[in-house]
Image (cartoon, rainbow, N blue to C red; front, side, top):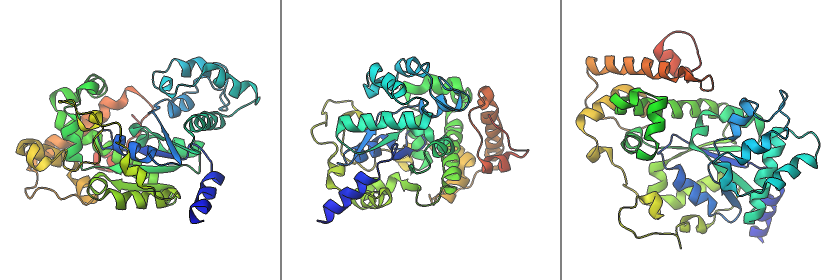
Length: 343
């Protein structure tokens, strides 16, 4: 009887996108996506990347934000959109049958179609970089919930500097990554985490929720129960069985591609990060580690390391000015000095 009542609440509150999972890339968001996607009431789309950019740049939209037919080819040819496996005719029908359609309504309809295909009423999205776009997404869907997964930046760094698949992208966007990968990765992690926390704090607890990767992999059942409470859905043990029938045993696969169950200890900066790299990382992002409750190494950065960190912070900000899409966190501006500015 209780389950039926809970299911009715889920069906009645069918506002999609229902949730966004965000976080600095390499923080475990794919693991969390798989866990949430295994819930019987929630379908998680593949990473989108196009949702805020189409709106902010008015791609296929009127200046007022209404959808035009030009949006259809824009989406159909987007490499990430193809993973939704929606027919072009279905998209065109969403416009033709409803007259003037706002972008938010159009995307909601797309998410509803995805949910219908998967037999689930609630649909969410996991795109790590949306940690920088919470305000835009909240403006489009004021009731959407945001789950921010945070991981110790030193372990994120270990993963990021060996992220060969995306290394070309990172070095083009942040040229300092080539010569100073640890400092740049530290700034990159701080940039994502601070922007998400600043935006999330303005939404309130009912819409913004922080999770720690370390807690998730140490006590997954407890953390998933708390997450379900935030999402207003009943906890289901199927969430922790997401890997069943998918695990691959080929040698050489990482945890993601092997579809391993929740596995702690995949990265450990204490044993895997050199003393020099640790000093460099903490000189750049040690303050944020402390704010988040992560223990720093006993030795504090020397003046030379602090000077290097200051130079790298300014260089990171300047390198980002190729685009007007990304802002700096408020705390970042205070540390760099000067007035607030955008990349």
